[in-house]
Image 1 (cartoon, each protein chain N blue to C red):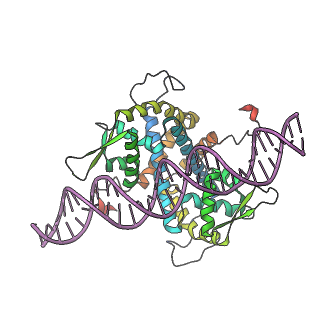
Image 2 (image 1 turned 90 degrees about the vertical axis):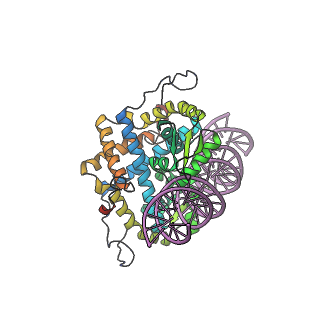
Image 3 (image 1 turned 30 degrees about the vertical axis):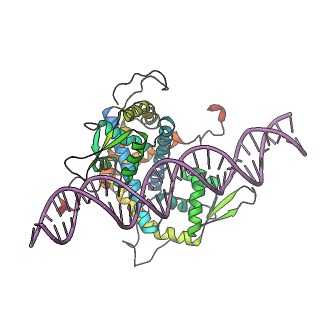
Length: 173
Length: 173
DNA sequence: CACTCGTACTTGAAACTTCAAGCAATGCTT
DNA sequence: AAGCATTGCTTGAAGTTTCAAGTACGAGTG
């Protein structure tokens, strides 16, 4: 904050600072997302002994065709790096919730597969989790606000997607 | 998922699962927050060599009366645990952006103080950061959406606040 | 004053994430 | 078919966060 006047490094001279209203919105966003993520993390850690992200991975696998998915695809859907996924799956594998399998068509490939034990953990954890999500989010918002939230979040997500749509039109970048 | 029928552990028998619309909203939320947080983290790590949260701490200190704040107060405002803050300040101190000072009135207390070097780092990083926030969020939303987002996030944050308002009316809990 | 409880903060270990290499298989190019 | 970039995934180390103690001071009570 305060006035700036350097001319050397920045991409532009003077950015448009956030107005008071914008700052309020931005801080509310930061606080809400932080508190909600912490809240859900603790809830799941307490009830199912796994962090929120790991839970999300199990959900993805549970919904996948034969309860299995290629690592890269899973990473893409979960919006995380392959490295992070590797570590996460390693942990889930150690717990017995997931196992790996070589891919036939591509010898480099790996499939992550949800085990029955994994599905069981998910079934146990899911009710408490949706309840928490409801209490923290949906129950507090009007239907209009819910709709609005969905639209806003879709816009933001699309804007940050590493060129999903149009990825097959690289000349447009 | 699947039908449940245990009577022992859960708080309730059968939760209200999320409808299709609700699921869409929830996933959009998860994706957007994940992508945005990653995006800002990388931007700040690249441009200022610090994670987003640490940047936020410097901002809080910069805005505080004499560029200083009690640890607990800082933790409260930043919505993080005291433990996390301790580690964070230790790192910032090692970098020379922050220093500590004992509190006179309460010998248990510590003040975190933003140094001139810290203020400098902040001044360097701030323009790029607001630009990133604008590009990812504000520039993509209509004024109505911005307003709506602010209202929604305030509601959510208040709902998860560890009893801030009304904390002095404990009998109401 | 002694006791006890709560507050302010720190610490170390374990868990998680990131980053930069790394390896092996694949695909493109000549 | 040989060379070279790319893709798919993993790994180890460094940084961050969480969790469960732990220390030290302050405040309330008898």
